[in-house]
Structures are given as C-alpha cells and as structure tokens.
Length: 626
Image 1: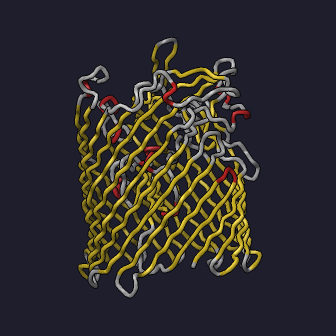
Image 2 (image 1 turned 60 degrees about the horizontal axis):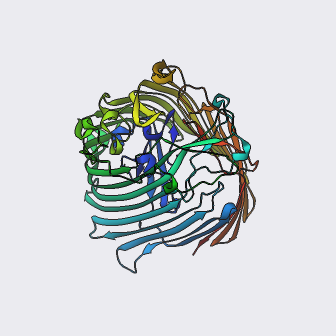
C-alpha cells in the first residue's frame, strides 16, 4: 500500500525526496518501493532541506540509494541463500573484479526474492540484475557504463479496516491476516536504469565528471483499495475499485566540476555543475475510482477479481505530463582557520511542466484541463560552519532553504492541483556535534533542528484527485546516535529522535450535514509522525566464530488523520539473530523477527485503515564469499 513512504523530521511521503545515485525520477514515493537491496552499496540520508543539492522536491529531506558498480578494489564472488516463514526466499549472486590484466573492471549482480506473504493473497516475486564496466581509457580519463533492471510481480495488501467508532483506533484481531482486495490483484512494476559516466582529471586538483542517464518504468495496478466496517461492525463495505497503468521515461545529462584550490588565500574546495532532464509520464486510470463495490461478510466472502465488478473499466489513457528541468548548482568549502570551515551551497532550477489531457474531446474530459503549462524558477541556498575543536570532537551549525512546485508529484498532477498554489518553500536551522569518547571506544552524534515549510499541499481524503492547501507546517527536534564497545566481546549501539511536528496553518474541508465546512487543524500533528523513535542493538561476540545480536525498535504514538481523532498506538519490536562464521568464506545466520508476535501498526492510511507489520518470522541465511 505505502511501501515507498518515508517519514523524516516530521514530514512524510512526497515531502521526502528519494534518489537513485543522486538522481530523482520525480515519482519517488512510488519509484522507491523496495524490491531487493542486493544491488545497493549504501544508503545516504540527509535530514532537512536539501534542494540545493538535489533540486525540486527535497524540501523535507532526502534519501539517496547508491548502487554497486565496478571499482578497482573489489575482487571475488558473493552469494546469499535465505529461507524463512511464509516461504520467504532469496537467492543472490555477485561478482566484482578485474578483467584479466587489462585496465577494465566489472561488477555483476543478480537476485531473486519471493514470499507467500503473511497476509492472505499477497504472494510476490521479484528479480533484479545489474552490470557495470569501469575502464581506464587513459591515465586521466575513466569510463563507467552501468545497467540495472528490476521486475516485481505482487498481489497487494492495502490495509486492515478499523472498527467503528474509528476514533478508538481499534481493529478486529480476527482480520489480522485477512486481505479484502480482489483476488489475483496487480501491483507490478518493471524498471530499467542506464548510466554512462565519464570522469576526466584535468589537473592534479581538478576533476570533471559527466553522467548521462536513462530511466524507463512501467507500472500496473488492478485493485480494490478501501475497506470499512458498517455502523454495526458486522460487514465490511468495499470501495475504490481502481486500475491504472503508468508509463514513464526520463533522459538527462549532468556535468560536474570539482576543484581544490585557494580563495582569498584560504584553502577552498569547489563543486559545481549543470543538470538537464527530460521526464515524461503517461497515466491511464480507470473511471470507477472511489465508487462502492460491495458489502461482504469478512469471514466468509468471495473476493472476486478486479474485472468481476460491473463498473470496472480497466486503464484508459488520461494524462501525459512532461517535465523539462535545467539546474545550475555550486558548493564550496572554505577553510577560514585551521579546523574552521565555512560551507555554502547555491542552486537555481528552471522547471517547465506541460500537461496534455488525452481524454480531450470525450465526455470524460475536463474542459479547463485540455492542456496547460506552468513554469517555476526557484533559487535555494545553504550556509554552515564546521569547527574541529579537537581531532575527535567537532561542532557545526547550518541554515538551509528549499523550494519546489506545489502538489508534490508533478509527473501525475492535474490543473486543479496546482492552479491556486505558489511555490512550496522551506527553511531549516540545525546545530550539532560529532565526537569520540572513552579512549575512542565510543562515538556519538547529536543534532537539534527547526524546520518549516510553507504553501504545502496534501491529498484530499475524500477525493484523491484533489489537493488541499496547507498554509504552514513546522517541526523541531533532537536526534542522537551513539555506539560503544564496552568490552572486546560486548558492544552496544543506539539512536533516538524526538520531534515536535505541527500544522501551523491548515484549514481542512470537512463535510458536515451535507455541507463542506473549513475546520482549522492548526496545532495538530501530521499523520504518521511519531513524537519519539528509538532503536538499540546489543552484540555479544561470545566465540571467535560466533556472535549474538539483540535489537529493539520503538515507535511512539501517532495519528492516522490531520484531525488527530484516530490514534495509532505505540509499539516496540524485538528481533534477535545468531551468526556462525563456519569458515573464512561462509557465514550462517539464524534470525527471529518480532519475537513477541506483536500485531503492531507500521503505517496508517487516512481512509482510515492500518497496515500491520509482519508477525513472528523465522529465517536462516547462508552468505558465501569465494
């Protein structure tokens, strides 16, 4: 249902940009739906506004998934085999190394992942493949070509309905593993990435990098997505039969220059570039979205297929949105004194949107939306100071701004979503410190922040095709992370975050007695934002070849709706694993997730429905290196 949604520092969903090797497809909350992290080398997280780095959409924060690619250090094979509860299964293989004695290196990875699913009718399978070739063409010029393909076939679980009154925030435990979607539902996607990278070392301290990229994605949905108990809590009313196809492709080029030198006799490090992107998405939704489907006995019903419902029309071409974006950006680090650095960043975006209504001239068309175009030109920046008080202790402070067009996702927006809205703007002030302690056996980071966004929009829960304006939303909070090796055998790591997130200005339209009434939500907490989040990991290396780990995760109370009338209870999840290094090249891991078998709530949909987390799950995995 919401597999790609992320909350960070009080902001959620499309307010958080998710990138792939520094590139955004402008449909991140869907494109970032996890498939298989076997292709991923690392994940970079930047809290708060980062538009100056990554462009429009990065007002609330950004997450960057960096893929494995060919490199000059890696040599050898990796393999992973996994089997677990609900027929969870994985098999993966990777190889990286030099091609003979040449100046070429390759990286190849492939993986399959599948499961029967812990909820009824949620079987899924996915396959991924990537290949890259790094070539040193000259002593100064290198070339990398990288290709990734991902395919996912999934039957969808959209949530568990709440009992009436929904303000109690309760669900019937008997429905924990029931799926009220249509049988053989579709929640599929196929994705192709191609990147071509040229890196030229112009001089000892000057480097030019050019990245040409191509992205092609096809996504299909055939589902019944909303379920509600009737007033007596005896039957479930199903609605929102919906089908759609999305065809998206993107092509672009990024040219970057990095230079290390001096500015006014101060040591200086520059990074600047230009990025040009053409991004087009064609959306083909069905006509019956939001309408009632049927009323069922939840414990004795025939789910039917999507096309069994009389009103189901299947996908019909509706809208083609084209984005043309040109961005200029620059960053600088200036060493003012030994250990004191001034960091600055500046970015200018020219964003052009052209939208064509493919149903124009038919009874389905909205006359005011036959076609339209809009243009935005945001300028954003940041400024920060970093001071190394000692080699193992520093302080920093920074102020950053951000701006993006309204409606969050421009690749699927319509005229009604953006006609009345100006740019969404954001700003953040942050201070923090990173330090080591206890004779370098421990390390920690701590940060405090204030983040504000203005002119936001959110989805209308009564009409998903419409956007509602939010005047302003802000958050303040503290984050901390620490790790400590208590003894050579015992170590502990933990993190926590406290965030006070509120709507500062937000009038929500609520239907009362047949009339739309504007009710202020100022002072309320945004949906799915917990005030407290914390994690800990305790590791015991009790044998030269064996290690035990115990992990805890705590997520505090949240709300499912902007009115803060539907509570989502806090949860604590406990996981444990035992690893045995059978040989230098083989590791065996036994894992138990959700030890207490808690029916915890991972995410809340404003309909409202709860997406429940997986029950107690057992896994065994073998990792081989050779």
